[in-house]
Length: 474
Ligand code: ZN
Image (cartoon, rainbow, N blue to C red; front, side):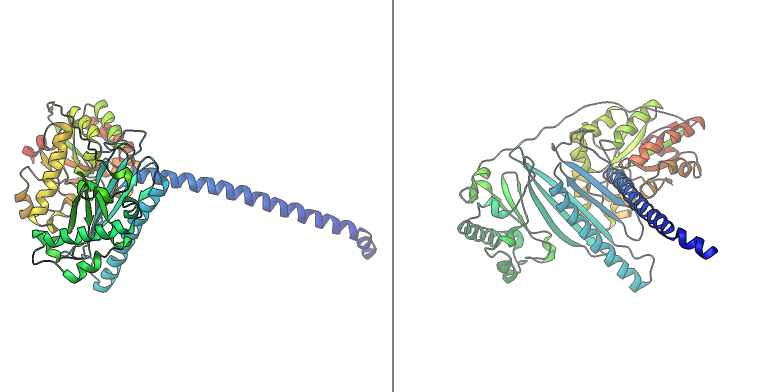
């Protein structure tokens, strides 16, 4: 009976089974596709967020001194693997990607070298450093030369210095090489190579320091040998790495060729010159307070984070101190001026964020003086306090800096957690009178987390004062 029943229903069961399998399968396919789509959207959104946070500056917020160009600052205060990297970004993806590729490769090379070293030495205190900074030279309205200088060390003494340049057309987004500059002409290249050689041989700075055979090999008339160049002050500057054609003592050897001198060799669009420069100067006085905390913001100014912080400080009638990087002041002089005009103290944090204890005295002074000049140009007044990058200083460095050298008493670690919610606890848990609190105004998370900090300190009866004002009480 059972058997017969089953037999009669057999085909129906099969159809039902096949039917449900088809429905189930399509459901799985459907939800997988939707799911993937959803996941994809989610990751790309969070990637964008991360991207925006890392760059922490947007063209829409404020125009830099160099139209269409932003400066990105990426600093890690990590004790065992510190780095400070600054690089330009433009409105063109292709350019941004080639630049980022260079940065990524450099960073990887550094972290790999440091890991190997650490494993080999089994030593927590192994301290290297990677520093990438750059100079910007505008030319003829829409061309830019970027010169990136990379210092890398895996120990506490020696630096390896190398140069990378980009010559960029800000109207088309193209990266141009020496071939374009010399109009693809091999004859021009030969003449050019001869010019470079005679400039090097005549240069008194290279006397007795020249590695002649290597120099001749490195200046042969081959396109690939002249990839590092910039146009600045109406000259074409050719770069070599430290130790490449001279003894390392010379530093980074450069050949400076006035454009007028090589004018006939150049492609037509590069044949005349144009320079532009302007400065904005202003004046204003600082203000005062009594029961004290000094808020400090390092590594800026930044068109987005600094502006947001300024608004909050104004809301709480709070004065703070901004330890600015010369390189960023050069890019955002208007933001530096806004900070100054709002009555905050302007501190110097060096030009490119190197570990000063590793530099020669001459280099320390260069870092300090170039930043002073940028701050002077932007605000009309020099910096009144100095904070060494990574807090790294010694008697020699302190002796070279003519203004008070000041570190901090509370580190919020905002550069590390980049989490707005963690800012208040890090202050609350360490708060004491006359505290100097370290934060960074290049992270939007710091700006986002600042209001609860201001509220808390105000409720606790603290007056917000500048570093110079708090120093007598410490
Ligand atoms: Zn810093």
